[in-house]
Length: 67
Image (tube, rainbow, N blue to C red):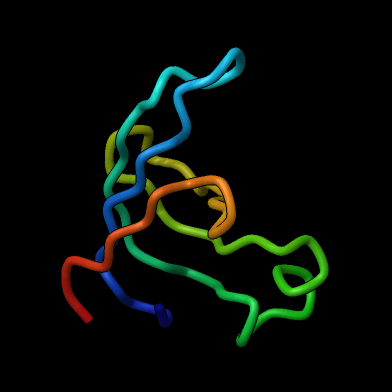
């Protein structure tokens, strides 16, 4: 995954999340941002919420739709 990729993200279905799905464009990755590397997340611009969102490769299901 790299900056500019179109991704589809599914959050886990657990007590906190309800398995929501989002689509967005990757803004920052652990490879491009020291902060993202420190917290272990990637950052996307979400089309549905029109905001920045942090996604986690360990807990979220992430599918790269185009690169």
